[in-house]
Length: 219
Image (cartoon, rainbow, N blue to C red; front, side, top):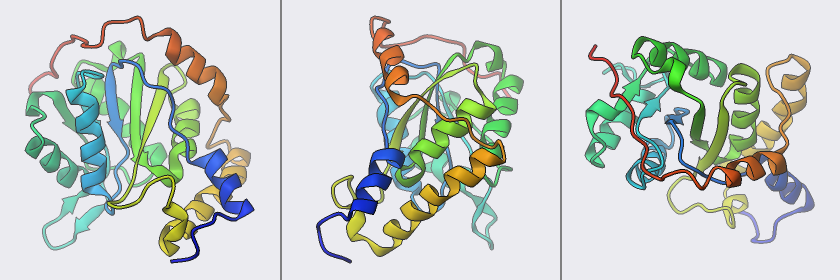
């Protein structure tokens, strides 16, 4: 660990990268898988579901956690979600994607097969907190038709106040920050106006909290 005071660089990274949006009821919660924070991702998404902010949770992540058992990120997250009393009929998942662009592509295909694809207009994303803005920017590029909100997931014991005290998270946050300009140049991302996004979300809060919608078609 380093000292408790954030450097100017860390403050700049935090202000730009580590962002949560305003939240309103959404059609679906989309989890961006990460094998290092399985429980944190599931906890955040389950909280969103049990608060009535979404009717379905779409879990992505094909990176293997355990090569011996061939368990993927999404396998592990789904199991924790079930343990947290999210009904299986409200869970969708894919086991193929290995990066954020693929997460979105595979999620859209899975939702389409389940008969939900055309009805998705609003999404609450959940992913590793260090990549919060990159997730939003990737959604803006790869799924621009939907309104995307976001909640970051933190490892146990980590908060927005103390992330900089952890060597691995300092490095990950810096790495995520350094990806932005090259990814913009490659057209992987689209810059977002966070203020305008939050204003749009606030305007939706008059909608009923508990949404109703069809369950996914049986596989």
